[in-house]
Image 1 (cartoon, rainbow, N blue to C red):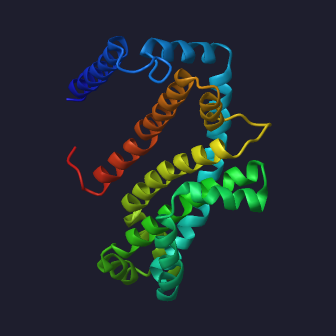
Image 2 (image 1 turned 180 degrees about the horizontal axis):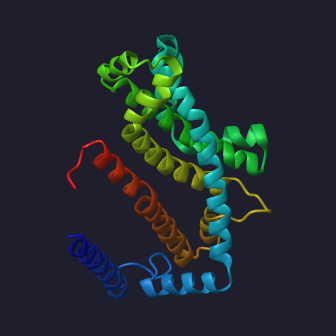
Length: 257
């Protein structure tokens, strides 16, 4: 089944590439605006050869992982707090719901004013893109755990923090992983917005490559970097989140083997 899906995916993207090449060859758009797949592949090959792509991807991933980790470190305990305390749910929880709807790019001007043109501004935007999704996912996940779990734990001597850490939180892991996945996606978008608008000489990321491609009117660079960003996102999902989600669904009996 997986082999069949793999070939279907390859066929689908092959058709997309053929359609893309057909549009370019038909002359419907200027090659300056819509470069051919070969031109994009040529840019990616040259940029990989001279180390530009590898260095930029490394800078971006470092920022993303640090900001995402900080967002998780703050979002998980805050989500646990809002799930257990009604006052926190009516205050922090409502604030999280409101700020989650705020587009990531809106944090960039605030970050520039507060931190200036430096790495702290980048990390702030990424944390803001991650924090609220994780907080809401943890809070909702813990509140959907059947109360009988906690009652059964109490009959076996579990109390307070022990019940929270060993019963409630593990039972809400599927929701937490879903929140982490959503937070990762928001973190990606936040970081790209920050790298496009915040210029840092010490670290050239993928967002800056997008920005310079636009400035130079080099559409093969813009589309090539966009494809690389999509590829990294798909790789993270396939390598990290999808296996973890499948394991949890199997472990909790939500999916047949």
